[in-house]
Length: 307
Image 1: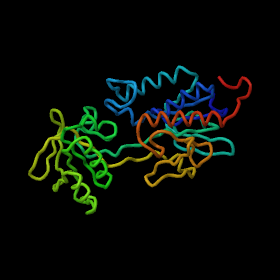
Image 2: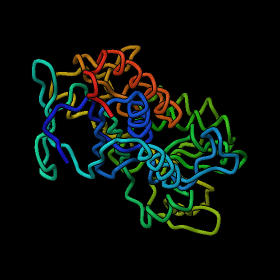
Image 3: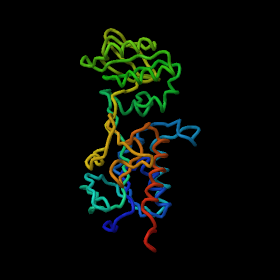
Image 4: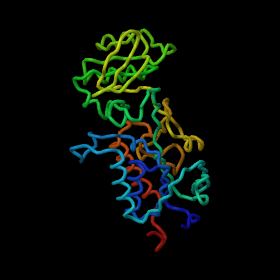
């Protein structure tokens, strides 16, 4: 693989945003390199029922497999590796990483690196997620909790917003604070009670999977819930961009313009790493916008220079 001549674009991240970007740019007959570390958040989704086109739902792994198969029908190059550093030159970027065979030069870069969920200290957490008992996204699957008892576990005001959001689906919502150090302001507690949300006075002591849900033991009580929503926030994978001085919002998401370009010229971002709603549909739409903008910014290729 000849990596030295500058690629038109390097896509960092192989989730829905990255794969969509690769497909679009390849169809624009641009020289595209996709670098995928295999850590897409979407891969952990047991079943997505709100992504258009799949009436019965589709797992994250199946969706990623189909999107990658589609992208690889075009002449893109793919590296299963991680980019450790990103440098900017006068007219391009240089990608480097321990697993990369050589430094990669690209005229444009799009970050589709996503976020990491902060997981709760929950036994059998992976199994609970796979079975749809442990959840991270009420926008994605709040509908499936409709009319059923739901618990929210948090240690910050982020959990307050999530619990109130879930009241649209269930009138039986309980908020648990994860530990004794977690304290909510009186104003937040008042909002919760006004919304009809139970705030557990005792901290949860143990969790156990049960048929159709999860058991939460707290104080002298034991109660079953259909789902447990973890509201500990996310870690935004924006380090490569912020290392170049890219602007972030208050939550750490990359700030982008109407064309998905960051504050660093030539550096774009799409998907969960960019400021906005964390949804696959949004990631795909942002990727389409970024790809079109990148294509137009590159101008006409040299004769015979592109696939």
